[in-house]
Image (cartoon, rainbow, N blue to C red; front, side, top):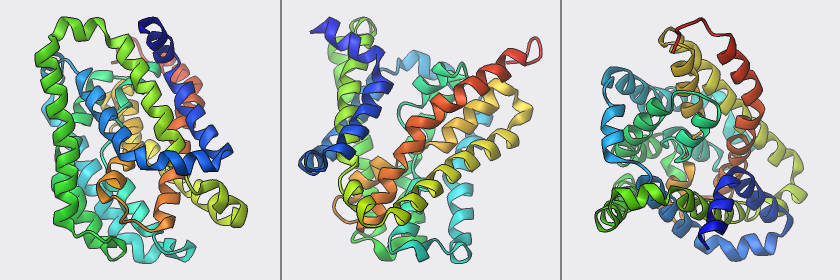
Length: 317
């Protein structure tokens, strides 16, 4: 079993993408797996927190100013800027619930696999991990109220309920991970990281299938709408990547690109899980198509990023 999990872990990105393809190809399976969505999200968070060595994490906060500025930009400035611009963007012309999906995405913390992707791209994984933890801690405090203020009329939950659910999911996952770390010990967990990656790959496969529920049918029925939402998701991800990288360019290539990547890919899934069944269908569809940039952009960006890293000035971090 251990060798199987390690094999799966080495192919985690492909397996996760495979879940999306299976969900699109077999809509009935996506509908059947959808009830497991929130459970998959919770355990993805548990194992993500479990992989974080507390001593290693403390070292990540030795430059708190940069982490604080980036976190403030991601969790406050970005969603507020888009929120105030919403009436002028006309995104709701695409259908009810699109503005809610957009705000839920922009108010969410980075994806839990940010550090793993940063390592693949040879970026600053330490900074990525610190930003991930800081943003996740602030999510229950900030995100529900920002989303509720700008697009809350489409939610069946009020901001306080959403905050409590987010706190339960994120706090509960951290508590379970801490309990497992206390019970198993740092050495055993470090030795099992490859197996944990395999478990994560399986959970991402389930997540990918469940996330595609309804997407195939909607694509057949309204291909222009789904295509437009997909383009919107890519435009936002690429725009955030470029803008954040430029804003932090003076911090060096390795750090600025890491911040750009982290800001572009948000864990909207944790917001959806907290909202339960309280989101419109088009909000769910936007969430589903927002997974495409997460899976595709790292692979597409890798050659460009690697070339930039190879050409960076000697001594640049």
